[in-house]
Image 1 (cartoon, rainbow, N blue to C red):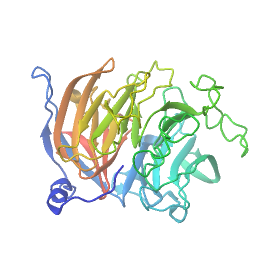
Image 2 (cartoon, one colour; image 1 turned 90 degrees about the vertical axis):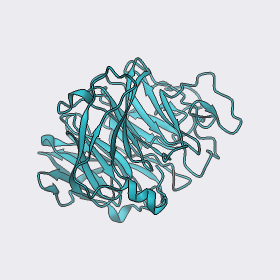
Image 3 (cartoon, one colour; image 1 turned 45 degrees about the vertical axis):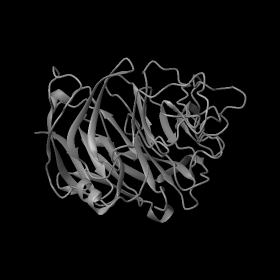
Image 4 (spheres, rainbow, N blue to C red; image 1 turned 180 degrees about the vertical axis):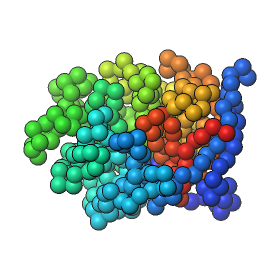
Length: 382
């Protein structure tokens, strides 16, 4: 994630959230493919929306970066159901960065940086659809050397385990070599069982026995995949279980990484030896490098990929199975069709979501777009 300004002309073109609906046509690599006509419908305004999750009773929960969580209803966002604003800061790329429910909606998890900048994963019990504040406990922490590239996204995978994305720790160019270092949680996707520990500070979570680096000397057992710079947003395909990661580039290349549901983990996505498919600052490509399924350069307006979701809703039939993503600076919603790890089609929905910071997948598979300026919009059929 990058939070930076462009010229007023560019920002004026990007931030179109004041318009409630925008129409576009999906263009694909094949003229024979169906075209999906969509609109972006603004359904609420938030204060710096940063993340969201499908919650109990079909509701969508929205996190605001300054530290509040609110539930989306028929008439917009309700009053905060959680407020940790006194415990976090929006300096740099910090704040409340991720939220997730376990598959049974029995627990709610938040990912945030505390006042010292430490990445923190906390858990709350959920009863009758409501958070139980007195049950709050810290599951995992990770110190961050710099206020950028914190990552912070969290998701439960199809296997029921919690996956956590951490960036390389920040600054620029991975000065500490965290991306390729298996002895740190930075620059990684982690996989843990948050309720499998004994609940004490010594064992607040369990590590799945089939994690790829369990018992390997010099490697953290929690690591699922590595070689990532700032995996700001990742997701699992609700239809296939495949993993897709939007990894923000350093200066030239933005990338989307992919792993099949059958993966046993251990993928090395290359950073900081590689930026996308390209050696970074004279680096040598690792022998086990897993190249991105898609990359794009910064010759246009793009500067920071915002990973999204494979659309599995029912409202837009022609969009079914397409991966929807965007870029924080460009703001255009784009699509990829991926089969067996190969891109078979690229699309441009043509709608501008503003400075797109995140996507949210509702319980019914419909997708919402979050713009840092405040718009919470749903992708609807035209």
